[in-house]
Image (cartoon, rainbow, N blue to C red; front, side, top):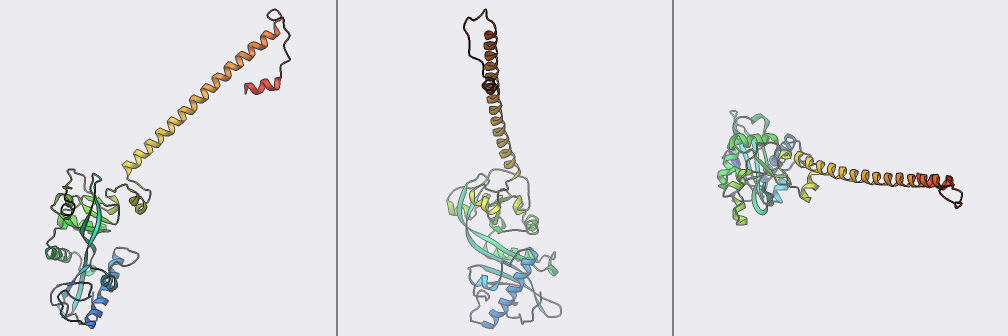
Length: 299
């Protein structure tokens, strides 16, 4: 993306690290003009990133970076015509998260999070993305499997699988996704909790944030709605069907008992009528039968 600014001050290196001062890290003086240039670049690149990810609003802007402790890696390139263009951005930041493993255990930890990652469409599939990612990992002395990713797109998940062999997602019931390898490393979770959280399970590779395993707690239901995964839905449906069948059987049994009692009452009343009609079986006169009451007792 080209800008009508002199970017020579920030393009001395291909990748520039910018903090919440809106100046390159290590920049020694206050420079409002350079801050304005960087603000404009961040706003335009953040907007382009939001459009590429089909977001309702950009997640990267100069104002948001100013009000946070996040770090942004900005990648530039010199064209043969002597111009400087902005190729992409990578926004990172530390966050305290509640992390779940596949066993359902939960731990609170500080995790380094990938918050926004965008390479301009004119520079994609040319190796810029992996170069920017590796620079960030080396700068922080961290591995890709130790990251938490905020709302990853399928394209980003494919990228992580291609270059870092990360594909087994462990969804955290929020916007963040980590990978199974996170618990198998000497990462921040073990250091924070003091417990071995490594997982001894294997699962098939899956892509897409909503395709990952989700912890079924109240907050997950609030964030993701009432839709559960297929296995849990099947179990719940089987339980509801079984409960419905048991209730129906009880009702049918109760109806059968009532019908048997009615049949017995009918037989007794029929026998009583026959006895009244037989003068040899009874010398006593009986009161006249009330047909209305008799009909009510039968039905």
